[in-house]
Length: 336
Image 1 (cartoon, one colour):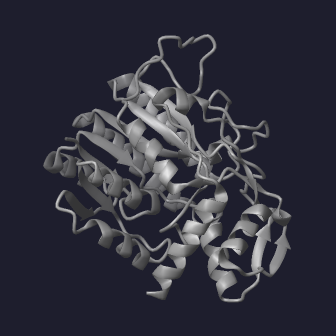
Image 2: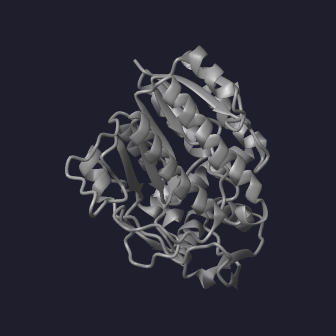
């Protein structure tokens, strides 16, 4: 039985991951700072689903608090770490850059140091499809260079991958980064399009549709994400025996280091995504078409072959099905 430390346990992906880990018999120690980036009441409600479990323990802790992490590791003795805590949001990073430096850079190196000192069997951390930035060749592959981020959020996530590789190389710490592609589903974040659109449509409000509704995203359902995350967590990164330092692959190396896309591999035009919401609600939305926002990518699509080869899994929940499940949750949760 593993003791898994999950950072960002009160978050969207964090809560679902904790629930799955507990269901399979792991001991889970969850940490979160419960910040006010969005309504903390939703985070508290997520936690309320986990706290009754006898194998779950929660501590309110900020990963940017350098002394707190080593002390926590010494007490809880994690065998594996799933790092999901971060300052999220592309647009928010334009106005609040220091929040990203504190959480995503300083916080991540604090965690790496704690994992190195303990040490742990495997560190799996959340990267993002945003690292592909100005790339336009689709689908995005882990073999692609990611040297042109178009938001500070993306730059911090690429930095996490570089920092992880350094620790894998210097200290033989197995690390795996997962580039999430627009995760959605029940208990989702209020700053995400699905939540905002559903809330506005039910209130009879006009929705703001950026990129004239022609943005493309590889929307990935939460259950698919968690299945992939757990499979990766159970398979610590190893050096790539075929790695060629004269033609280095960005997603692997001579160190125990891996990076994988985890997406639906079914890119969806934003207007079609909205149509799925309308169908689930039985309501036609009033739309305000707007240009692309600064920092937004025009299209994302995941090449998931490397993940499938590594752990034998590829996400596949249809958008229509996933959106319907979210809408059902939203109505039930906010009716209550």
